[in-house]
Structures are given as structure tokens and as C-alpha cells.
Image (cartoon, rainbow, N blue to C red):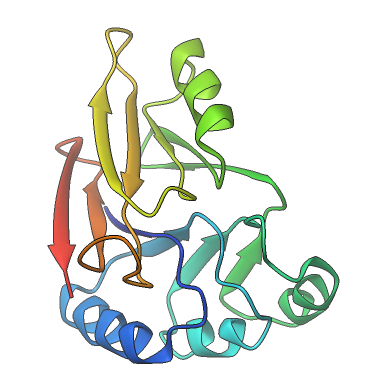
Length: 162
């Protein structure tokens, strides 16, 4: 199974359209968004992919209106501050906050722990077997916008730039 991992969209619709085109070509089985999509209208754009998507809140996301919008969503699941899923026998946790992700990864209960917030790619394979990952940003504020693709079968990460 292939899981696209994105973060820090920040309502950048131009970069989202570029991301969407790449995701449509890659055809991931699901998507994880590690927060800071920003406005609830982004959920409508995420829905257009028709791909299962798991989303957590970032520090600037509109929680109330987004929660209401996700209740009616066919594809987007909102997990609050912390999400955890199992895909192909791999346990994956995701949050927006690096400090929270670091603690989760160090506990060693997950194969992959994902975070955002810093707007910078980061990949760390910890001694306990957990991978700590920041996919970078879709926004394009600090570095070349991009995302990551996690292959559950091979337990590998591939980074893509927009």
C-alpha cells in the first residue's frame, strides 16, 4: 500500500493543484495530512481526489467549522490533534506538532510517526525501528514545496517536489 503524506498546505491553491496532479498520477491508496490546511474550504478540495484522507489539526486550522464539514465528508476523516491508523500491518501516528511526534516515535509503538509545523523535510530512522517523518510543506514558504510517499510493503519513503 502506498500512502501520500502531506502537511502545511496553508490554503495555497496553486500548489494544491500541482500536488493534486502528482497524486492523481501516483494513485496512492490513502493520504495523511499533518495539519495546517488552514481554512475549512480546503476539505472540499481534498474531497475532489476521491481518495481516503486522514487529517489532523494544525495550530492555525479552524477547528469548529472544519469538524462540521468533515462530518459530511465521504473521503476525509478528521482525527483531532492526533491520528493513528493501521495500514498493511503498519502502525502510523500523525500529528502537527514536532515535540508530540518525537515523544510518540521514541516510545517505539509505531512504524511511522508523521508531523508538520516546521515547514521543512525531516527523516529520522530511530534505533527502536520507528521512522519519524516531516514531509515538508505544500505552501512553499521555507523550502521547495513537496510531499512524501510511504510504501508499507517496503517500509520506504520517497520525497516528491512540486
